[in-house]
Amino acid sequence: MAEGIFAAEIVAECRRRGLLAGAYALRRPRTATFLRRLARDLTEQRKAPRVLVRRGVALLREEPAVLARQTGLGAEAARAREVLRRVAALLPGHPRQH
Image 1 (cartoon, rainbow, N blue to C red):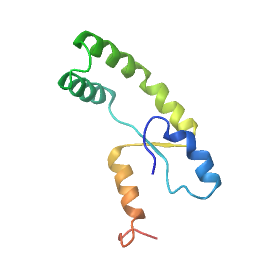
Image 2 (cartoon, helix red, strand yellow; image 1 turned 180 degrees about the vertical axis):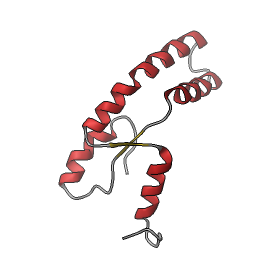
Image 3 (tube, rainbow, N blue to C red; image 1 turned 60 degrees about the horizontal axis):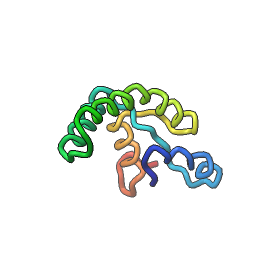
């Protein structure tokens, strides 16, 4: 399992080696992501609030391009619940396992 913004970099190679069970890029409401990130960063006092808001807005605007890049590298855009459902189905003894 790999996670993070660069995880999609290894999708093609994992697929080529037969090691890939699934590759997903989380698709979340951008505003919710912005607010969660801002709340976390303000709580942790990472930088001045003005800087955090500016950075958050920039990331909010970049998110569609990031998701497009991830899917271009082979990840499937999916909501968190769908990813959790699919991963659970891979676990031994799960009722939907094939």
